Length: 173
Image 1: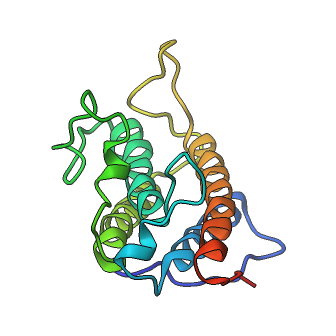
Image 2 (image 1 turned 45 degrees about the vertical axis):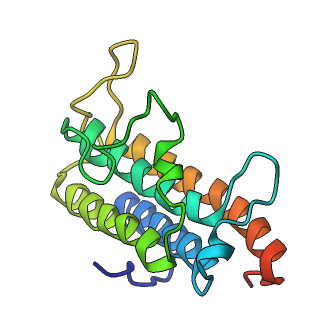
């Protein structure tokens, strides 16, 4: 379970290579925003919403699992998310991070990324449709999922930038 290797984003490449390069870039940028923080710093919120870097780490692990294992391949949730009670706490995947060190909070994310990358590599086409459907009975394509995941990470990188800067002045250059 290791962080995805840093890659240069090519200026020209086939669609899959380009999408994976951007996804890998944003995954790494996101993880770096929390690296080096202690347990207390990982729980520092920037706003009244309570959003913290620790909460974002476990949230993105769950998001990776939802899109690739659950929706794309039709599997059931896996630990640590399978045991969470979302009826009692709708943000349970975020609450999970409370009291975790960086290594503890990032471990489920790195595991989910490895699993997702394996599933992506096993898919022979970006047109592959998900096993599970949305509420309207429609399927997503793998292409749609990859673009969505890039958007999800890019948005949360912005949140993470602001939170990290408020903690120790660190600005990701």
